[in-house]
Length: 171
Image (cartoon, rainbow, N blue to C red; front, side, top):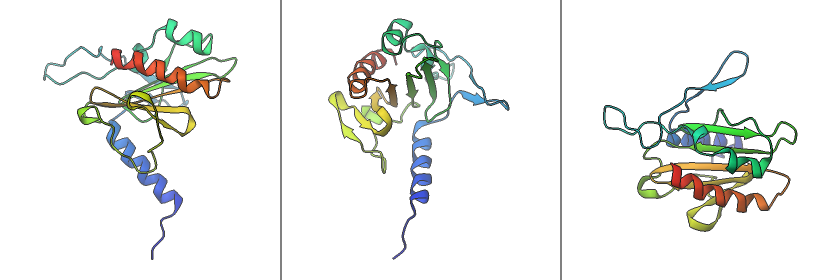
């Protein structure tokens, strides 16, 4: 019987995740900085009739982020899995919020696809809690994630649930 190594499983899982979530609008320069081009709002349409990409950095307002992590950098495009990924970080505490929005069709009919190794723990309203404080959820037909990292630990889940509610309304 042939054994699958953990590395092979990880590579396969990442490939499936990347394919399901589309491409990122962020790019990394030679000096390691990430940048992204602002996208149209969720309601915007392209000439072809397809939906324009969502800019994750426009989804949370300072009033949503500051009470959770304190002062922060205002949100910056970052690398990760999804059509658009944005992170807010407090430079003093390293507390952060990261939002990842998958492309259209990545959660067909508003349902998350089962991914090997990414089943997680069931949460309220169809949310799946994954390792690392990640809450995975469907917003319309998009597979999305939010990660909250603070010293609150277990309270980060309840904060993530609140943010998911805001994000679903804005995507």
